[in-house]
Amino acid sequence: MAIVEVKVPQLSESVAEATMLQWKKKVGEAVAADEILIEIETDKVVLEVPAPAAGVISEIIVADGGTVAAEQLIARIDTEGKAGAAAAPAAAAPASAPAAAPVAAAATGGNMAGVAMPAAAKLMADNNLAAGSVSGSGKDGRVTKGDVLSAVAGGVKSTAAVIPTGVPTKTLAQVAAPAVNLGDRPEQRVPMTRLRARVAERLLQSQSTNAILTTFNEINMAPVMDMRKRMQERFEKEHGVKLGFMSFFVKAAVHALKKFPVLNASVDGNDIVYHGYFDIGIAVGSPRGLVVPILRNADQMSFADIEKKIAEFGVKARDGKLGIEEMTGGTFSISNGGTFGSMMSTPIINPPQSAILGVHATKDRAMVENGQVVVRPMNYFAMSYDHRIIDGREAVLGLVAMKEALEDPARLLFDI
Image (cartoon, one colour):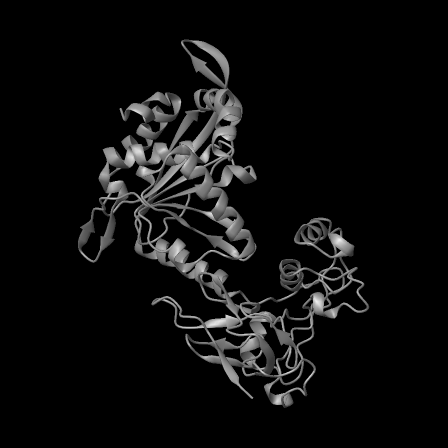
């Protein structure tokens, strides 16, 4: 017998522990080298743990929902074992969350109908959907992530999970509490995930440590929309990605940050740290909560570079694949609530940054120009800033600089 140990990957310096999600293999099942065995959630990202070698799972040491630290031993693989070997003692077997959807291993006789793909299985577990409650549209009737999202949007009811006897307290974060029967006023208590708890902690920290003030302005988006319409087809053909509005917003933000460096600064004790680089955080909503991946050296990126990177961030956020290094740092952030239809908001600063831009939905509105009422596609921009180091003058003029750049996009080309 040749045993290989499976350990928790190295976590970032700011992350002390993580939570085990759902094992994709059971004791006695065969695994291939680099096959994903389980995902581990930290307060920042979800990490995949691959099999270090091919073989058979001989022991699972930490069950679903367990709390682990970096480099902790969580399982063992017998590289000379055969599938179907006797399972390890019950104490070592994982306590499975009852709401978890089956993966391909549950199929029998080659019939894959109703079997959930890995991403779909995770999403079903997150939404407490019972196996068989979602119809599959994938190959051989497999349930895809799109099927689950459609089912959730369509109102498929979740199954209230009953916490099994003997499950360690630390696994409760992975098990939804049973619904309380209050007649026509039901309730269900669900613990926060690590990521959601971390988001809550950071937002409270921001509001308690920053002197947050928000300034607003209205942007006529017609010039950007006209340019985008003219260039869209050629841009996509040349670069293989669509030309969106976010690249314009990033370019306009960098344009303003260069003119008013304090907007790109941060507070460290009694010091103001002025950053000589422009790392722009892009707030992205994910199934697990808000994440803010970073565009490194955004001032050196082309429109195509920005669009490609944002598209990549969107896919990774959706699939829980963003790495810790992709969300570390950042000197300024942009939050685009307009994608969800928001008309106006006051964004909260992402510490340790000192300012954040909130972008909203563009709508046709009646505007007065030269004494005449005209219809223009308008967008309300909001910039929240830390008044401890940023005065109203810099904040207002910074937002005006963004407005001028977007209403005359040629400024972005000539940096004026």
